[in-house]
Image 1 (cartoon, rainbow, N blue to C red):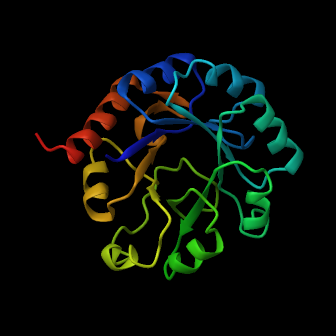
Image 2 (cartoon, one colour):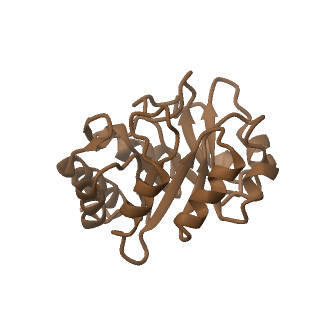
Length: 215
């Protein structure tokens, strides 16, 4: 079954809607420049609403080591997601927190996914997103036909998380083509930046589940 992460949550009702719909994980953005950013304290408050087996994920972009440690202390069950530049978020940096982590791969033409997976082989998975000048939540898809996914699966051993521009309308196509371990959505289930739409969340989760188990 394809795992589902709803990212960029800022409100209690949105956390509750994601849980009620059947999400496996919810994401809290620690990047201050994002319209979906929350403080460490706010993320901890929201994470307390999560039942067992729904994982909180903390998204960082080129963050100071001390602040990542502070967030880990505040939310001890969190998975980490590093979405910044390769020079700042090296494999050694990501590993240093002794926490399971996801590494975002920002896809551009000619991107060497096999090499990237090798560099970040300690990650729990690679999150595939579109390359844009800002970081995350743009509603932009990358070219899903950029890779031969069947061939790639023999060389990339890490689980893949499909992200970037997913919506209830296109997630089935993305799953059918990429066959990811998980999908990650943010702007595609919003009615305004940082404000989720409970019906869109429910529709997205249903679309994923129907793809896994066609009616």
